[in-house]
Image (tube, helix red, strand yellow):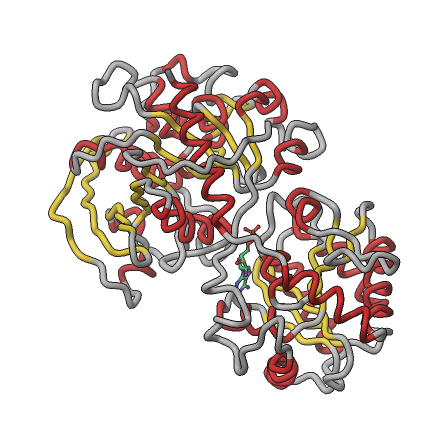
Length: 497
Ligand code: ADP
């Protein structure tokens, strides 16, 4: 469903954003960027907004000004009585963020998985506790939210509690919910024997509720019970209604298609633009691109590559997951190493990709650089130092890096899926319009063809400058998307009534 963008100021609306990760406090992916940036932009439109997330170890030990609020609570999760307290901090200049503190559940190194990449065994307990704490917040802080904006499986139970356990409670009965799918593949699935931990009435464990092939599915809870659903691009909103992309939930999503919207993530250009970026050795802009070469030289040095800075440099920053197209990229590497280009990668994830990319980097140390890490500063430097950015994803709900890349004059080479398809337009030599290179078929041959096309264009300096400028001129700032979210909150309120 398409939404109109409102231009009116929406005062008096109160929103809680429930997000399990928020920049700058904790991040594993795009959700954290969204939850960190959206509040300030909706507040600018006159909407009051607080964010609530778990209090992880990295926040406890990090360099953040976190205060106690003195508000604590307890309730039973399954047979265990658990206590929690709220901590608070500022989020940007205007917003407050509250943390749900329970050290037994959240004081550990990972957010959702242990050091071996295995899901924490008590994830259901952890996010039941978190979701119920978000609802508890309204009571303890006398915060009468009009809408709770839930995100991904970690907060999927909130709409289920509101529609079942709390539907006659005067404090909660009018609270509307928006549920945003940042990635349909991560669903929070738990064994049916754990159902009593959710605290939901028994009849919710049915195919019309949170049951999923005999298990409990927290993402499905959000999809079934939220008043309005959205995902992070229009294309992905359509794709997830198909069997190919629906991850087993396409039936539920098609059933709710009239309540399902697509809103592209925005970019916070105060952080992600070469004019403002404090991580760069030299800043640059559309009008003066000279600093980009300094960034490139520094990056080549950082990765120890020996190629001439005049040659094209291809970059990847990513979770190393199947979703991101690493199988076709690995096949395409055979051709990439034959071209006179550099290639650098920053990412962590699946050990098989760690192994394969490490092997290739060892074989071709002059032109291939691999860093298996999560490193925010380096991610910024790669955006600035590279000429081409690769995202050959199998599926991509929105994708942020291709949008960041545009602003850095780092031309995206992407597969036409989800948000990649919505944001990247093939460059035409004839019209000189377009901002990147896009292929349809998920195959190494299609990817390689686009890389070759890009490398050829790079040697035609005038045309290359044009494609770089086309991308740098584009504006994907949060202003537009924030207005769409405000409209979505209003839609949720009206659907609830
Ligand atoms: P996803 O949420 O699927 O991981 P997105 O493109 O939407 O993909 O968002 C990824 C975000 O995480 C971007 O801000 C990107 O820069 C960042 N990121 C991913 N991997 C790394 C890494 N290894 N080091 C630093 N930042 C990373």
